[in-house]
Every structure is written in C-alpha cells, then in structure tokens.
Image (cartoon, rainbow, N blue to C red; front, side, top):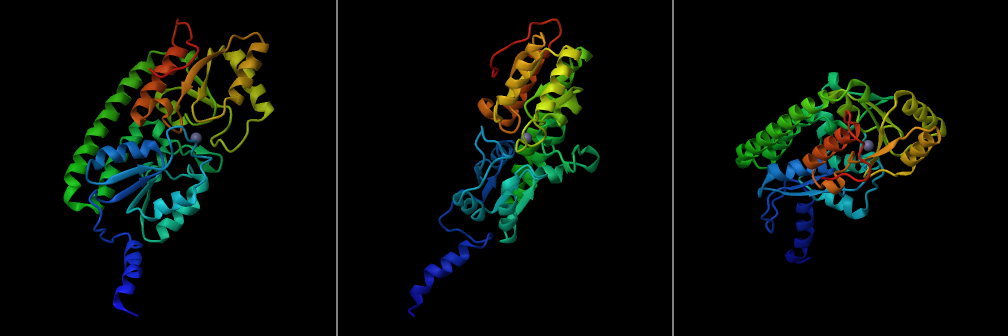
Amino acid sequence: MAPYKLLPLLAALALSCSDSVDAGRTEGPRVVCTTAMIGDLAREIAGDEASVSTLFGTDMDPHLFRPTRDDVRLLMAADLVLYNGLHLEGYLTDALERVGDSGVEVIPVAEQTLLEAERIDSGPAPDPHVWMDPSIWSRVPRLIAGALGQQRPSERPSFMARAAAIEARLLAADEAYRESFSALAPERRVLLTAHDAFRYFGRRYGLEVRGIQGTSTTSEASLSTIEELVNLVVERDIPAVFFESSVSERNVEALLEGARAQGHDLQLGGILHADAPGAARTYEAMLESNVSTILRALGVGQETAAGDDVR
Ligand SMILES: [Zn+2]
C-alpha cells in the first residue's frame, strides 16, 4: 500500500483522540453543554478561547430529551462535555457514559457542585434542579473555569476572572431575591407549579413548593394528586398557580378548573421557566423573570396578574 493511502486512516485516528491537535481549528477546545443553565455560563467564561455549544434548546424539556445520532457525534467530537447530572438528562445518560469512556472529559457540574448537606431528595433519587438556587449555582462558574483551564492552561487566569464576575452577579441577585421574598406575607408563600422543579428555589426563598407532576416530567399527574391540590388551594386560599414553559399545560388547567368548580378564584400566575430559559433566553434572565412573576402573582394586597410573564 502506498504511504499516502494511510493518511486518511491516521487522520481519523487522530480525530478520535480528545487531546488531538486539530490543525484546521482556531477557536480552541470544543465544549458541549447539555442545558442553557450550564451553556450560558460556559460561553461567557470561555470568551473567544473555546467554542461552546448547548445541546438543549431554550424550550426543551431535559427529562424527555432523546439524543439523535448527530447529538452523539457532537458529544464524541468534544474536548469537554459539561452536563447537569443527578439524573436530569435521563435518556442521555448512557450516551454521556460512552462519551466519557471514549476519553472525552465529561463533568456533571450540578453533581460536583452540590454538597451532601445541600441535597434535596426526591424519593430514592436526588432532585436535579440545583440551578434554581443561585447561591449554590454561583459556585458552578469556578468549576467550569477550572475545567476550561485544564484544556487551555495559558487562559486559566482569564477564565477564572470571568467566572468570579459571574459568581458576584449571581450572589448579588440572590441577595436581592431574598430581600424581595422576605416582604411576602407568610401565608402567601406557596408556589404551585406544573412539575416539582422549584424545591431548591423554595428552600432558599422560604416558599412552600408543590408540583403537580413530580420531579420528573416523565411521570403523569394522577387524578388524586389534582384533587389533593384543589383542596390545598381552597383551604389555604392560594391565589395563583403557574405554567412552565417547557412542560405540558394540561395538568395546570385541570387544577384551575378543579379549584374554580369549588368556587375558588384561582388565577394563572404566569409562565415560569424551570428546566430551560424559554422566552427569557438566558439563565440569569430566567431567574429574574421567575422571581418577578412569582412576586407579582403572590404579592400582598395586590391583584394577581394573569396572562403571560416575561418582562
Ligand atoms: Zn425538571
């Protein structure tokens, strides 16, 4: 065989190694993130020193995401994969394992950030919705910067500086949210929403959280759950229930109808963004939007705001 015929084969072998030098590439390491809550941070921290892509769209339900061949190919070609973990990416978990086995650096950022003492359990499994507490999520930027710094050591100081800036922003937002929620009357502090994604959020800001559908959207709400929640709404005089942008509206509508059938004027408090930023587009705007939607709907002595949110 002539030597030149070996070249394509060697090139293919080189590409399959995560630490291969890709001569045609100028944008640095390839980073693939699963959720926008991770991808937004990674993109800002990376600046121009890495190319960052996000697998889940801004309206996509991560619990139901099934990877295509192209998604798996994208993951296999990455230098670094950042995912949530704690079983958020249910159907993707096998593929992520295979990608990790092939030598790509694969990091479950929520799993690695969350301390044992901070963990909320949901039945036998941990609740994966850790980004809902920005005081915990504020530690994710440094983790990402560290992982990017491994890929590109010369840029580590700039990665760390950008991570510190995001951390400061998230901590400042958290402080402001705590103050706003503390003004809410204690009996109004009940958050009723489509699925159980807000427990970290509720714990942080003193809200009792009830999801209609459980922690994962793969399970359906039962009729008895709806009935139980209708009773809670009537008993506690809860003013509003919320839609979520990435979750089916059917269950929320059943609850609205049930409460109204009992003569309770339950309102739609607006749309919350739980597992994807939706119309808010970014992680930080999604937090802002959720906080203002909830405060507006549960606010003391104010009319509940029906209709859609997004400032
Ligand atoms: Zn969820």
